[in-house]
Amino acid sequence: WQRSLVPDSYDMAAMGYPDDGGGPPGHGHAGGLSVTDLTGPSGPADVSVALTARREGAGYTLNHVSPGPEIRARQGQLVEVRLVNESVPDGVTLHWHGVDVPNAEDGVAGVTQDAVPRGGSHVYRFVVRDAGTYWYHSHQVGHEQVRLGLFGALVVTPAPAPQPGFDADPVVAVHTYGGRRTVNGRPGVGHLAARPGVSVRARVINTDAGPIRVWVSGAAYRVEAVDGRDVHEPTPVSDTAVLVTAGGRIDVAFTVPDTGARVEVGAGTALVVGPGPDAPATAQPRATLDLLGYGTPAPLGFDPAKATRVFRYEVGRRPGFLDGRPGLWWTVNGHLFPDLPMFMVTTGDVVRMTIANTSGEVHPMHLHGHHAVVLSRNGAAATGSPWWVDSLDVGDDETYEIAFVADNPGIWVDHCHNLQHAAEGLLAHLAYH
Ligand code: C2O
Ligand code: CU
Image (tube, rainbow, N blue to C red):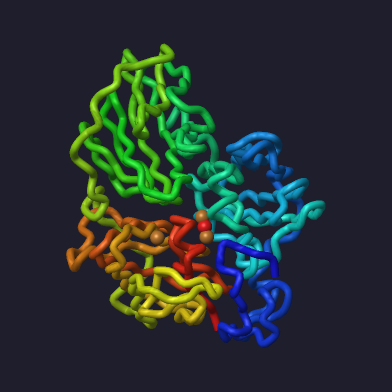
């Protein structure tokens, strides 16, 4: 096994995986599942991309740039990405953050594949079933490789194209390189030329380790989507920021005013959308939008009251040993990695999961392969649009209840997207049997 973002002591067999050989799905079998349940489709690709990972200077690039090339596909298309590792010493993978791909395409080193060594290559194939804003990043020593540049945006537009109701839908990928916050790889203020009156859907992606506050100066805006899922009937807000979870995405929609608008991501960093290269900035709003009550209710497509699995996931912290190193490590239900509970489900299960955090820090919890809906926070039920997430900030002393349908067989990681925390053991598994 190559090193992944999980600690070196990681050993699937020792964790009691249903696959007796300890091998990843797609290489063997997992319980009653067949390999074809877990792998990507065959046939010609609609979108083909070649990405070459390199070590350049103090960082990493894909096709010589960071962020890597933006990948765009239409809903329902088959995407094929050929990854070549030219010079990343630790090996590299690509994970399609937020895209519910077949398990074998998930790009998690040590779980769904070995990291691609220098000189090696790997082909990913998957159909993008859900329109939305996503991103891709290395899932090998992720806490270093993502920070140092191995990521890019992935946008899936609704079928049929073009995006209904929007004239432009720019990506606003936020990343901090060496202490400087950037948008699409550039510090300061970027510009997208747009005439007044044009409707814009800005796709904000938080590739950093902590939450960022985002707002629009110069125009009221709607939160159109969260983590690639549209908000049902969002209402416009102004003088209000919205929090983008680490790893999460927020699409903000607005109409370009005469003087232009700024999509602000903090620290003087913004994307100006308007006729000129700058637009008036407003002070950072004090209010923060609460997504628990935003938009209007709509059917979920399943009934969380009829749960067939109920899990509790308590995040804490205590001293112990990880990989033989003494330290203060994260715990799940009191256990230190790798002695963590594995959440076992069967295809078709309705899963309710409580995530409680008493660890003293915020944890942006990210579940692979699934979208979950937020049911409640600290006992208060959600009252707005279904709030679908793949990345959810759970603050200290907060308790969330989420629910999802187990409809994507395989072995999936569920971890903190402050990737340093994941490397410090804040990672569990959801496994189908
Ligand atoms: Cu965006 Cu497991 O990662
Ligand atoms: Cu964390």
